[in-house]
Length: 143
Image 1 (cartoon, helix red, strand yellow):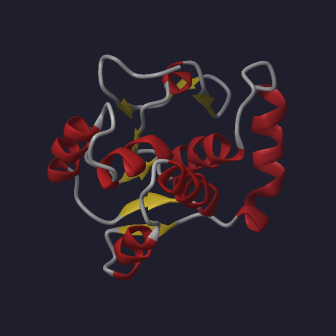
Image 2 (cartoon, helix red, strand yellow):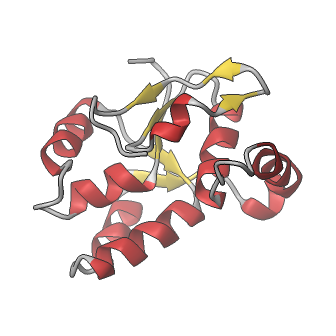
Image 3 (cartoon, rainbow, N blue to C red):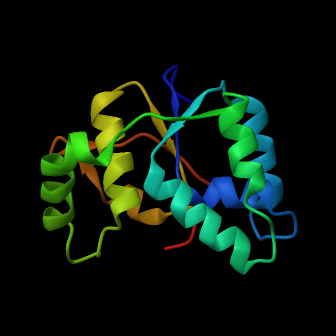
């Protein structure tokens, strides 16, 4: 684990809030080890709200985490749009989501941070073109 901030992706957020999902126990254990606030972006929250609803859970818990300062929106798409566009173009073969691009950009801004994810694409993505992004993910991460 790095000493920097946790950079929160959709998968661990949804898994933490939705008991019964495949990675729920792993996500809960990881949340105990991470220091708040976990940094994220609005596209991650949008995806999480959608997935929680699809799984039959209320999205209110997302707002509670924001209100308590456990998670913090640390990137504005409007301020980073040129870099986000460049990342999405570079990884169009994946294809990279806006949430993923935001997390890569957060890892460029917070170089000591670690992306907390279930998405194995983060083993492929690079920050600043060629630098490996530190990740925290289960051995059985999804692709």
